[in-house]
Each structure stands twice: as structure tokens, then as C-alpha cells.
Image 1 (tube, rainbow, N blue to C red):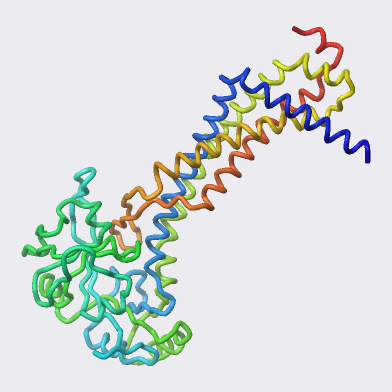
Image 2: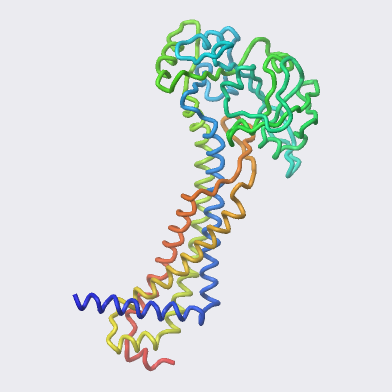
Length: 399
């Protein structure tokens, strides 16, 4: 027991001495710390793009809402339905009811080109045609400026994300849809969801503008509860008058986010890993320098009876201290610079732009700190072993 207490006492003494000498090597220490900070900042910032995109997509999902597409369709862009089909879907069992009828929203989905505010280059922007009941089904949508469009008129409302990213989407401005000019009468929010990247208008007017007749591309149905989804799905799939695919809205949006999320996460991790290699070499250089500067000090401690174990621990602790400091600086920097930063990227499922905000989550910050810890451990391990193996007699003769 006394030996264990003595060992920990030696660790505490040697580690304290090691940390007190960091300022004497502030140049190399700062280089290692800020190198690790850069790695963590890049990792957290890049992964926050993926998190922000996934949040924008998944925030649109509701477990009690079902999406109905034509059978074989992977997205709304590929789907097609007659107006008579949408009425059958609204009459299916399990659909919630309002004072005005079933909460089933037949919707039209088209793509228009608009220039980005940042670059001026054209991008695909979703234009969605909805019926009045669509606002009850999309119950997170709320007008924050102006008013909603009036049915039967060439008026649109614009999601706050789209208004931020694309030029010409200001309240009171006009955009060209088909051969006509349409007035922007409102700006809406949708809880950070995918709808904020869209422009909405009256479905009947949009059908006329694109000569679609009485056709739609999807139906969004609000169910009485998530538990009635199997009954609702079975009723539609077994109806010989319909040829449809029925999915939970949450599952549909989870699938929509997979490609972009995995792509951004993979690239971000690859870039951070390549940078981490450089940071490890920086930490190695710093800790080897520290060991060289303390050669006589370490040899003296060994000659006084200190074990090699406390020396190894002291070098590792110093390396971890620098790594954690760098990780904290990198994480905090990424949070203040990137959290909430708005951007847009392509949704490869619908071939349209999705506006979203970078999302630096606590989990990403923890991941960054863990990454910094691994770099610190690797960077300090070999110098620590070298310090423990220094021949005492030879080290004492060095300057």
C-alpha cells in the first residue's frame, strides 16, 4: 500500500514539474496546440454541415403522417397521381378528420431555376402546389412575414431558408413561373424543416401554369395516430383502383438524407484524418523537444529514486494537456464561427437545393475532444517511452 501511495506521489510531483515548464517551451507547445485546434475545428465544422442537413430533412418528418406516392417512385419528382386517386386516399381508414373533411393534402411538386444570392449561379428550387388543407397537414408551417397566398391567384409564399439563399425572393417581389409573373406575398417558417427551402402556391393555379390538368404527385395524410399506419397502408395497397407506395413521412425523409449525410461525413472525416497525421507529427516534435530539454532533469529524478513509470505518465499528461487545450480552442472556434451559418446544397433525391443551417451539436464537440485526446496520446507515447529509457549516467553528463 505504501509503495502504491509513493508511486502516485511521484507521478504528481513529476507531472507538476512537467506542466510548470511548458512556458519555457511556449513556441513548440503553441504550435502543437493550435495544430490540434485546427484539426478539431475542421472536423467539427465539416460534420456540422451533415448534422444541419439531416436536421433540416428530419425536422420535416412526423410519425403520425404518411406519404403516398405512385408505386415504384423513389421521390415526389418521379411520382404521378390523378385527382380521383387523391380522393380515394383521403377516404382511407385512419386518416384524421377536420371540420372541412379529411386531413389529406394532394400536392404538386415542380422545379424552377433561381440565382443564388452568394454566387449568382442558377440553382433548382422546389415549387410546391398545395390545397388549403395542406396547412393543417403541414402543421409546423407558420407565416412570419406578410400573408398566405389566396387560392386562384398567381401568388406564392417563400420559405425563410429559400428567401435567405436565393436572389429575388423578397416580400413583394415577383418571380416568373411558367409564362406569368407571380407575386411573393409571404415568408414562412417550418421549424427548421425541409419546407423552409421551398416556395408554395395554390395547387390548382400551378396545375394550370404547367398544363398538368387534374394531376398531383403525392398525397400527405395526417393519421389519427402512428399506430394506425399499418391499417392505412394495407387499405391502400389492397385497393385495386390504386397503384401506390405508402411510407411513413419520417422514413421517407430519413432515406432522403442518407446520401448527402454519408457523403459529407465521409469527406469530413477523411480531411480531418489527413490533417490529424500532421498534428500527430507536431505533437511528437513538441514532446520530443520537451524530453530533450528535460534530459538532465529526468535523469536527476531517476537518480533520486523516481521510477520510470511516473516519468512516462508525466510526458503523456503534458501531451494530453496540450491536446485537450487545442481541442477546446478548436471546438469553441467552430461553434462560434459555424453554428447557425446558413448554406444550401443539392438534395440528390429531388435534384433541388436544400437550404439549412450548420448545426454544431454537443455530440460533435465531444467527438472533437475525443479526436484531440487520441492525437495527444499518440503524440506523447513515443517521447514518453524515450524519456523512461534514458540512461541515467549518460543523461547526467548532457548539457
